[in-house]
Image 1 (tube, rainbow, N blue to C red):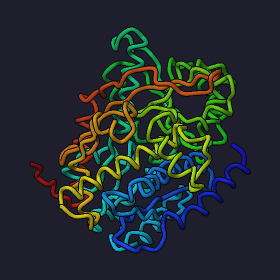
Image 2 (spheres, rainbow, N blue to C red):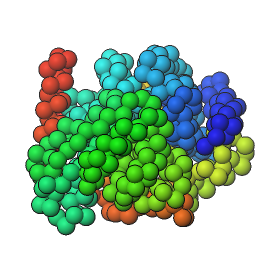
Image 3 (cartoon, rainbow, N blue to C red):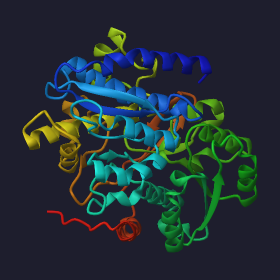
Length: 439
């Protein structure tokens, strides 16, 4: 993606903001959007923010909002900087008559900082598939939701996939698996899980950190060439991903043995490597592509009116769909909160109840214009991570598209469940949290 295109998208977004945020004339539902359209991670932050905003704007234009209440989307630029993210939270939490209803930080660092704040301010944080994994335990983290799966789920699914390709989990013994990771709280999330898996299945585990923003990786991939791991996993974001894929190609590492976390599996990550990226894999929890009825409604009600946040031909890219599905689950939690409390005039505390009663099955996905788009999700007081299932997608450089190449695997819960219990108990002890009783 070139700078001119990024600049054009940023201008389009700024032009569209008043249409989304406008002056309230009735009770509006305030949803802050912590965006990063600037900085080194902008190429990844922009399509997510576009999908998130376009879906909510479509609800406004097509349905008059949620149950007749318009959505007031308040954009705040974080540049993927934790300090700025916290400032955005403080500056927007009291916005509008409803106050902020929910936050999607799109950053593990920001999420960690908002966890204690959310419980005081009684505003839910929806760290969708990222953030603190042990927040899956709703008894200890009543205000944080990280469905449809956690990083620990995903790491164990990758081990299951590798075991399957090697001919059985017993064949992992003696294998060598490397993790190339962003040297931050985000990148370090899967390490404990992979260490446990290595201990249980007898493979050698190599840790290869890459410092922010990830443009210099020569030494990392020289080490990969020397160590010759059987498989390489990657926890990257932004420019780090495309550099890693290019470097892997330069040492002729087999792409079908290179698996990225679902934040390392977008068009932005593979296109710069050209044909050399063919066969690269990543985690996924939704379909790629823009041929669902909900996409058609976004085109009709948003882009045909000149209100789109991005470019029409980029609807359906992986990270656009990631933002869309985040907005879908968020709006469904708000809808459920209205149903539970029998009012449209809801606050963040009510939306928390909506999340804990969320049940978006295949029938509901079809009603929303997203049949087969993602997995059914049901959340409870105890379980904030949802089903925990993960699929794999693969890049076809010739067709220039992603496709799901597996079903949805169950995680290795014998590894993840004890770690979640241990980590959440430690958090509760350190922060004086008394786990609530559910049910």
